[in-house]
Length: 379
Ligand code: ADP
Image 1 (cartoon, protein in one colour):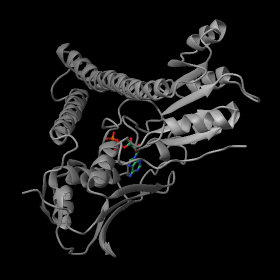
Image 2 (cartoon, protein in one colour):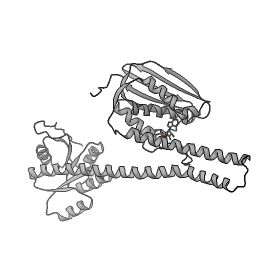
Image 3 (cartoon, protein in one colour):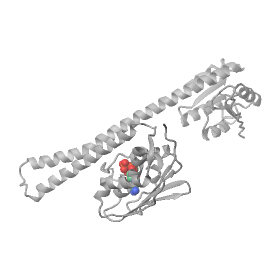
């Protein structure tokens, strides 16, 4: 049986909306703790198994647990919770004489101990301290994650740049042997390949510059009045990807909609990304249809292509940072796997959504939905 109870926040004390899970098989202890923690949201469980189910539902900030309980004891609960989320914070309620329990709990990374019988003031202080510790742990985890992402990014960039540079230097070595006449077909082929690889490098650098430009203001938006159809037409006109696929038929169905308040750079980035992807992941023939319509108080932009499509397994991952579908793992797929990730972030900042429906071999359809009521433009 799971017992749960939530006290609403107490505005008088100004406590923040944090959730404490109290685990004890004695109702009287749970009741005592939950009174001492007035002002927090409190969940209660009468054994480790029920506590674990509540924890797995998410939203628990601190667990305060007894040790001796039926079904699953407090130490097993501690172990399981730390396996699921190493940044979780668990306080063990136990007698200070119980040294073995304390040692075992420490081994499993218990965050604090409270002596039984309970002192309610100490209990409140321990929970407050535990919440600060949780915040620090989360900050540390996010810094580590950032560090990992930076390392991934650097190795991805080096990999992406090394392949074309190696190719260019090999082709140049060929030409430098002096064995080929500039009029020979093989000489011309080498020059063409050097040119192609140089263009690839140039596009990579342009893409990196775009990322650094749109990242300058981080999450803040520089709102101005924007006309969506102009943003779409600009994306099409300025895209080398679109220009390079002249064999693809482009079908436009753009309704004139009232202007919205948007960050031109960030929203333009997202729009350009789904349009460029439609061309990039299509062959030399086929069709890309771009439509802009209004639906109630929303603007709906759809970009449909008849290209490679995305398999069911890959589809949920394409919005992840650095994710690219590159089955042969050649590293030659253009881009950094950041386009859709940032597109989603930017569309969200505008209160909108972005999604892609697709099937391998049957093309894709990317949709951006944006609220049309004007966002407030700061003075
Ligand atoms: P990149 O910036 O490297 O192009 P994205 O984040 O834009 O990466 O896209 C991630 C992956 O999603 C791409 O590598 C590609 O495999 C897949 N993808 C995105 N759009 C399409 C599309 N229209 N058709 C097929 N695959 C697509």
